[in-house]
Image (cartoon, rainbow over all chains, first blue to last red; front, side):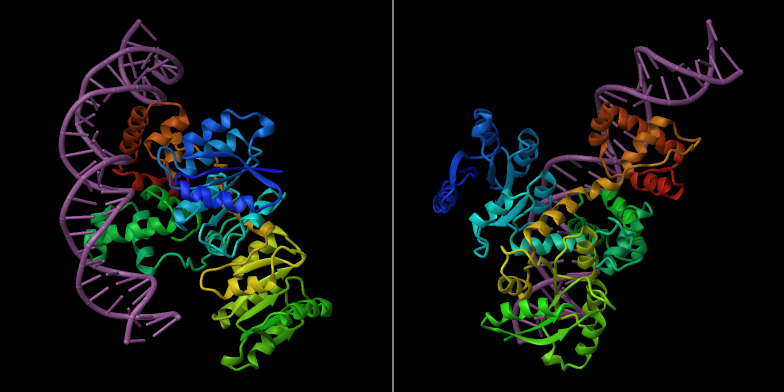
Length: 220
Length: 220
DNA sequence: TTAACAATAGAACATTTGTACTAATATTAG
DNA sequence: CTAATATTAGTACAAATGTTCTATTGTTAA
């Protein structure tokens, strides 16, 4: 019997998932929580042999979101497996969830993936369930992140546009927005617009982080 | 009607795949090759509207392996989608295949994944088919990627103190004042004090400029 | 011929950073 | 011992940056 936990702030979502679980032969819900805080508190009250083996975690929740809950929970309960069940395929969210320790990421609306199958895969030794859309994103990220084993020289980044690379280069040289704008004969606002796009694409949140990636992957 | 190509050096494997394809309603085999060279030659003989939309590619083949075939093929035939069908879940192979341009990676023995579904996913706009085992590996890679930037050599700068270099290193890694402070168990104010000293010594006026010098003189 | 995207420009607001100060310890070179 | 320097910690304010928006124009892919 597989012990399952559901964390979602919307009762309707929990009900839908519970109905799907009920259809499975070998599974039962042992924990239900509204948000990250609630989840951690309810986990603390359970004995070791009653702890859920798998948690189906929503991302957007009040008080404590799913990412933070996974970050803390995956350390505190290393034998529990966390599976994100989100409505959004927001890049940053997926990335953060994986970083936090989620073993899989499913889209709620993704009908192609059967929840039961996903649970089986998550619990099986070396499986990780993913919606095809999510799989594609992770592959694209991987593809564009050289430096694992082979250092792929001056390969095309494919992520950033030409103009974005212009800006990134000047950023690396230590120029501020105004100086970059003057250099490229454009408005400082435009430089900032490009910067926002760069951050979004690289999943970073500061100039220093962008510069670090630029050096690491030799984009400059 | 989906046009499919199979590249595998073992006739028995091709037969198995062909049988699975035959069971699909809307698909037909338009190309069959023994290895990478053979594949590229046979592709050249086909008209644009007869080119396969999807290639099921084996990895280990004589003369030219699947990775190289994808590398070349994905450039020459950008609208064709390459799907690796391998017996091995060898880390390097998977990674190389993705780098080469494969949109998905399936294990032949993986019974959980239906080939037809995988083909549909591969052809659909933003789907990528993956065996759960492969998905897990890619997730692990992603998770561990940003952390590879360790092991920095010590070098005498003669200008900066040890502590200042500590701070500079973390600055280069993209951490803000608070994060650096937490990392070094000191107050953010202290970090800022060090930063001021660093700027003074290096004659710079921003984080980005300091990072630039750090890279230029290989202090990190 | 739409749809998507790149490049441009800007408003508004919160956070972080840069700079100019002070100041207590600890260590070290002369 | 004394002076210099490193490390620590803080206040205060101005400037730069990060983020969330909107919006126009041109180019390109489907």
